[in-house]
Length: 115
Image (tube, rainbow, N blue to C red):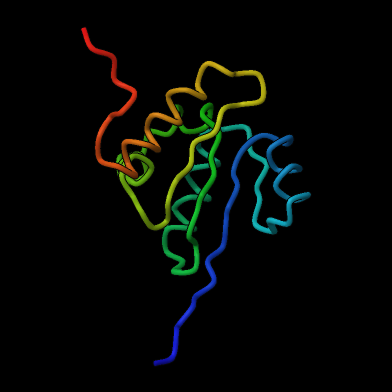
């Protein structure tokens, strides 16, 4: 039986620092944007491509996206998988991002505290 493998692209959308970091890491599809409207435009374009596997997006841009279809994709899509990362000076968002990734992967909230 022949194993079929497919290569998927990683897309990074965020600040200039995020863009530079991903380009240094070898990600060729990285976009430096400041406005959520610009991120929406790029995401709409990427959603139609079958070879996009992961879209990395900063929390600042993610929170400003108003398009309902894109918001739904960010919150629940498995392909492409959206990973929302903290902005360079926003460490408080990290815990919530990790929690959402765990919930999506396992289906349960293992970080939930008992009341």
